[in-house]
Amino acid sequence: MPIETKRINQVEFLTAGGISVPHGFTTRYGGVSTGTQASLNLAYGRGDTMENVVENLRRLGSALGFDPEKLVMTRQTHSDIVRVVTDRDCRGFCHKDYPECDALVTNTPEVTLLVFTADCTPMLFFDPVTGAVGAAHAGWRGTAQKIGAKTVQAMVENFGCKPENIRAAIGPNIGLCHFETDEDVPQAMLAAYGEEVRQFIEKRGDKYHLDLKAINAMSLNRVGVTQIEISDACTYCQCDRFWSHRASHGERGSQGAVITCKEVGR
Image (cartoon, rainbow, N blue to C red):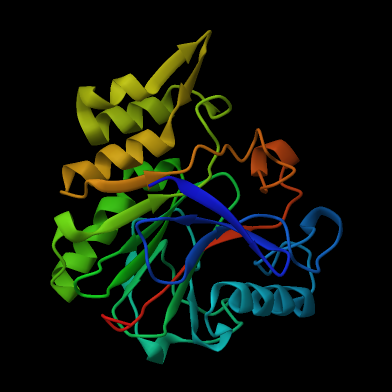
């Protein structure tokens, strides 16, 4: 099934047909923030006001059907840390005091997971058998550290999920067209994945371009996840619709990837 765009009460987000619980990859549209954070900025610390971010989270919750008071968010450091969380970890609209991590998993009903991006690769996970869900943020470092595969492994080890049952969605990120790097990045990918990853690396002059969506999908395939939906949106090419750290030279807000755990059968 393709990734689709939806708009509810002016809040625009992308959804995966294979994931049947509330979820979405947000865009810039539908919030109250202004300036470089206009308009659905979900992150504190980017120059926006707390009041704007809280209202944006409220609007997102209303559009997707989750309770913002039951949010668990990440404090991202481009690590490979996956946190297992429950309702005891919910802190509502605050994410400043969370422990460091770049991925979250839960099987607690009504808990909603949120990760932040602005060029990096967002991934969402759902197991319809156990009801467990996950969310991951993968920059190039997280991709090289296999944060997506480690999220799947956390779901397997903690909730008894089977990889073949897990449905994954990879959201908008900076595409092969604009993710330009020096040699250290492709070398990190080759060290992590071997020669198979070379098909997703292009040398252009003295620089390199990488397809991070494809590399993350390959990583998920290697741990047994085959049901993967992938957005074709590039945050740089569509920087009027998504925040792109590179396109904006760091003057930006943050979009999010969000997913809510539900009781199986509901």
